[in-house]
Length: 80
Image 1 (cartoon, rainbow, N blue to C red):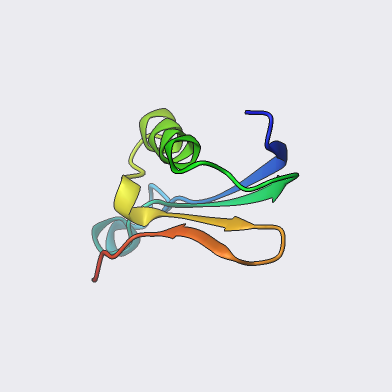
Image 2 (tube, rainbow, N blue to C red; image 1 turned 120 degrees about the horizontal axis):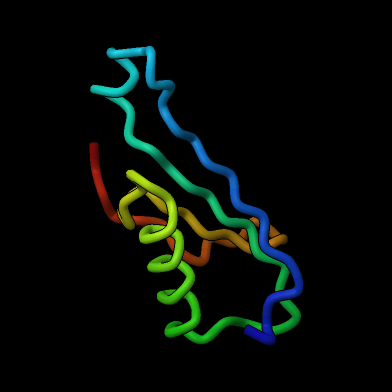
């Protein structure tokens, strides 16, 4: 993906020993992209799918993607 200069991924995974956390918290991922030009929607979809399939327990609805200027590129419509 030529449009991406850098990608930082932050994961929030509940601790295994904390039963309450595991029951109430879902694993989440936030991706911050530094871009040299805007992404095509297909590229963004590919990034979301890659994270969802690569990180155990992280579903698409718990992934957020922002750019280096804090613009939201993707945030799920999932409501808890």
